[in-house]
Image (tube, rainbow, N blue to C red; front, side):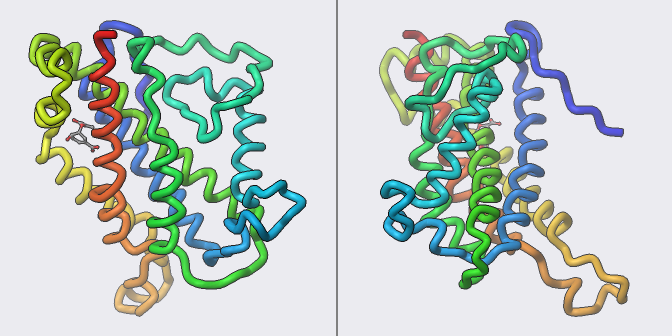
Length: 260
Ligand SMILES: C=C(O[C@@H]1C=C(C(=O)O)C=C[C@H]1O)C(=O)O
C-alpha cells in the first residue's frame, strides 16, 4: 500500500525530491477533479452574476466558493501554508488550532498568491475545454466540483513557494545574486528544469488516459474504450500553458522577496 510521505520538518527534510513527489501526487487530485467536473455540462447560469439578484450581484459559483472558504477557514484549513483562499478578505478566524504545521516558508514571501490568475484561467480558458454545452440545472453540484478543481489547481501552483524555498536553500549564493539584482529572467533560468517539465506533461497526459478511460466488459476494441472522460491532450495543455508557467511565476515572486 503506497504511503503518503509525511510533511517535512522545518529544516532538514525539505528536499527537492520530497517537493517533487508531492507535486506528482497532486497530479492525481487535479485529474480526478477535472474528470468529476466533466460529468456536468457547462451550466452557464452558475457563472452569470446578474442572473440571481438575490445573490447580491455575485455569481452562484462565487457565493458557493466564498461560503465554503468561510466554513473551511473556521475549521482551520488555511492554517496549512499549502492552502490559499480565493477570497482571503474577511475570512473568519479558525475556531480550533488544528495542527502545528511546520513553518518551512520564509515569512514575507509566504503570502505570495496568484489566485486571480488561477480563477480567470479556470473559468475563461479551461472550463470550455473540458465541458460540453448544456444546462442540467445542477448549479450547486457544478459549483461544488468547480471548487474542488480550483483548490487542487491552487494547491499545486502555490506549491511553487516550497519549490522555491528548497532551491534557494540548495544554492543560496546563486539565487542571492539574482534576487539582489531583482533579475526575474535570471531567476527563471536558474529555477527552470525543462526535462522535469517534459516528464510532468507526459505523465499527466498518461494519467488522464488511465484514470479517464471508460471501463467496459466488452473487448478493448469497443468504441467506448477509446473515449476518455477528459481529453488527455487538454490536461497536458493545462499544465503546459497554465499550471507550470503559473507555478514558476510563484517561484520567482517568492524568491524576489526571499531576502526581505
Ligand atoms: C516545480 C519545479 O520548478 C519548475 C516548474 C516545474 C513544474 O511546474 O512542473 C517543473 C520544473 C521546473 O521548471 C521543479 O523544479 O520541480
